[in-house]
Amino acid sequence: MPQLAYVDGRITRLAEARVHVEDRGLQFADSLYEVAAILNGRLLDWPQHLARLRRGLAALFIDFDMSDAALTLQAQRLVAANGQTEGLLYLQLSRGSARRDHPFPVAVRPTLIMTVRRFDFAQRVDQQQTGVSVITVNDMRWGRVDLKTTGLLPNVLAKQDARAAGAFEAWLLSPDAIVREGGSTNAWIVRQGRIITHPLSANILPGITRDTLIRLARAAQIPVDERPFTLAEALAADEALLTSTTAPLLPVVRIDGQAIGTGAPGPIATRLAALVWDEIARQTGWRRP
Image (cartoon, rainbow, N blue to C red; front, side):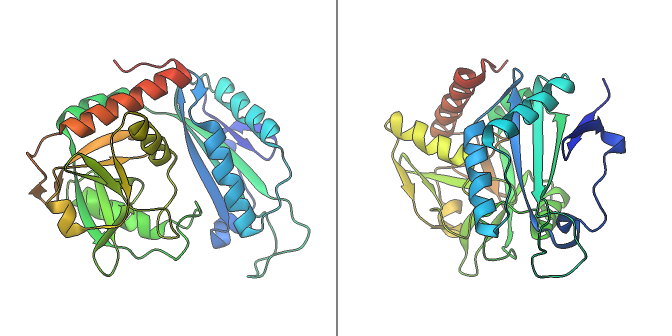
């Protein structure tokens, strides 16, 4: 089947999908986005994605009058039209198109685009068995990364550094060597049976899988500390891991070339990964191979 995209109420071939050259998402990155997993044809954690999107819209003063129910219907319609049962839904919502000028334009309509692409979640099962490596880079992003905007150039550069180093991810460090998060993931360490991750603030994205993992861990009586941790703590940790919609959870076995713990996925990360997969199965019916 041809790939199809949604642009402002119309589903069209991806190759023919267009937005205006003066769309503020293109000109200023004046836009938000969400990426949701499609598993067994169902959208994982969709209400949480919508809630985060609405929070971002309010913070950026973007007036988007489509209801959650209508937006959900359009997303499901696009997924079905693409015939996709396992993949990713990308949604981007900009302030709209107007003559290029920094202040907010008056009486413009937001631009909504959505695309769907296949994604092989089964590959993550193998990666969980071996773990992944990360490098660290200085955090060069703006001061409100809790808003999921499309202004991602620092993330792009960090991810490229990771690729050049043969690593899966780049962890972003504050000036005082606090590990904030990854270029597209949340960062975690394990010390003495406790999992630790940076607290919610303007310096990290409130990850959907991050929130799920905290809930699942606490339900399983695994202690969770939401506090800053340093690179030195991470290097001395018993285990490390990362989470995201596309991960969903992967053990980190090397940081900047140094083995973490035994240098192999540890028992806490393995248990947490099982909890996450069980939650995915509960929501969607999709089960790992």
